[in-house]
Amino acid sequence: LLNALKRAKSQDEYKIIFEETTPYQGDIEKQYFAHWLRIEEEQEFKEFLGLLARIRGPIPMNWVAQWVEKSLLEKLEKVWGQYFMSDSMGRWEFFHNSFKIFLEEKTADNLPGLTSVQINQQYHLELAQKYKGSDGPWKWETLYHFYKTEDHEKVLEIAQYDWFKEQVEAFRPIDAIETDVRLAVKSAGVLLDAVALLRLTLVGASLQQRTNVLADTEL
Image (tube, rainbow, N blue to C red; front, side, top):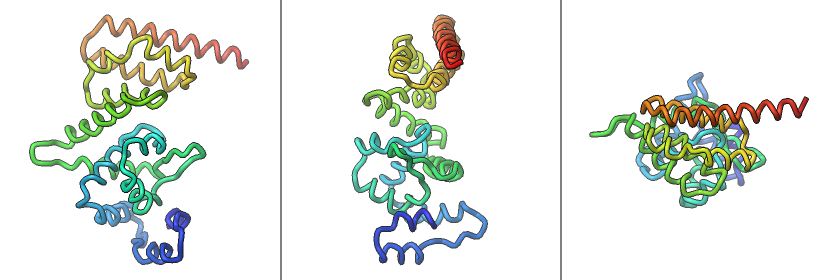
């Protein structure tokens, strides 16, 4: 409620918030569901929420604004804004992980001919394609989302030495790079690709060596 009131811009908006807010009765999902009912028939907006819920880490809203309709951003702020926090870089984060999980589940409900797993992978594929066409640092999320689609061949196609070298030179945090290397190693394991596994092991060792050098420098 406090977050919603902070975002209100007029007395009329204050009044609407107080009239429409579901009293908290110990079950936060009831509040989520009350808001969900307001947009349940709006397929385009639901799909937008499904994409946001699957973005890894803070949501870069300046990147999102490059590909989504302005009307959806306005609705997001009006209907769901209270469930997000923003930082000094303009990124949004879910105020609680339970809300992110709620959206992931509601936007992946089974449909005729599609399981929740398939729907989830479709969302990640769309994100992978959006990130792939972006500039760094956003494009570096491509590998993660292809991994979530279980397209392991695509993951290994991306996970080349130059892919990670570029990130190091752009000062992406080493631990973030290592996380993606580990995902690629898992893909190599699924495909039983010994060559890729060796290549990624060497990349991982190189990153670890760089981490040790940085640690020694700080000391």
